[in-house]
Length: 200
Image 1: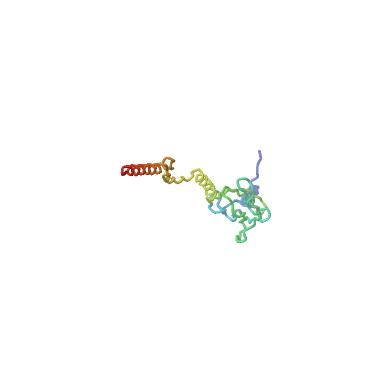
Image 2: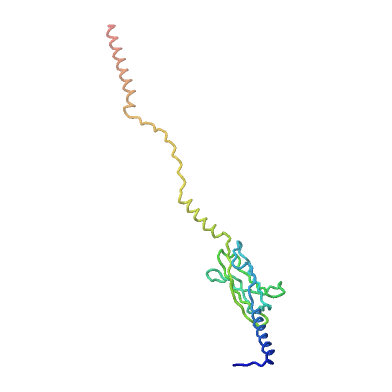
């Protein structure tokens, strides 16, 4: 059984304290995401122009090796690859990256790598945000409305009533007046002849 001399206890305690604080210091040195813009898990109605990530580590970050990478649902990169330390942050714990203009609606993933200045420790993580401007829904609804309007043709205007057609004149209709006149002339001629004979 190991026996520790009572005179060695101060050394043992000192070593334990050193190890404890060393472990705490290492934990504090590792970067942890404190906040972001857009916020992790949030939905925005306007496509952002950049992503900002703020970390809560004990030490400042170094630009070399610290990266923000943004991808869409298909895995395509949508950032400009220009991750920098935010100069407006005196603690140097904020990373910024620009995004391509006009991001479409969808879910985007931000993968981050943060390198601490103190011991050079590297921390990694990721979060997502969603763009939902409503433009996709509007563009999908427009063709559907157009298809419906094409599927329902406008009612044809009612046909105007046709004017009654003039009945054609037959040969009998044209000959009837002539026959009547001929008969009258014949009767008149016979009457004159009979009258003359009567006078004789």
